[in-house]
Image (cartoon, rainbow, N blue to C red):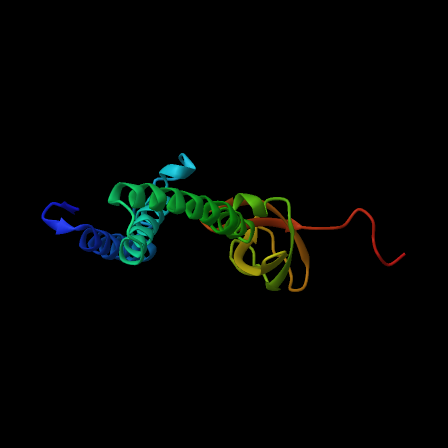
Length: 178
């Protein structure tokens, strides 16, 4: 069978190459075109994977079997759909939740206790470190009431503005040295 003046093998191969190239471009530049969290099956990654898998399965079936081209298209579509569903649920979904679990926002730092590593002068800036599940974060800090805070003191993060933490000296309610 021919379509657009091309044999089905050629059409599947050109589609495979085109979809593979688009997938590669999307991997590198996908963050620019990210539309946010919409319907998961309208995700460009899923659509491009489906087209690539459909073309690959169709090409392999055209070359290795003597089935009718419409039957091959149907089988290839079912195979591509099943592999696409497996890709989504076992690779893309766990990766998306793992990606967000190690990230932090400035708002998530509010109320946490940090340690001063560079003293905070009156009306000036110092540096604090915050230990999180994802590692140690070092941030610029200033006194909430413009007070000086010495090195190795524990501070409570009260506010975050423009990447600067506004902190107060922290005294734990229950001391560990009892």
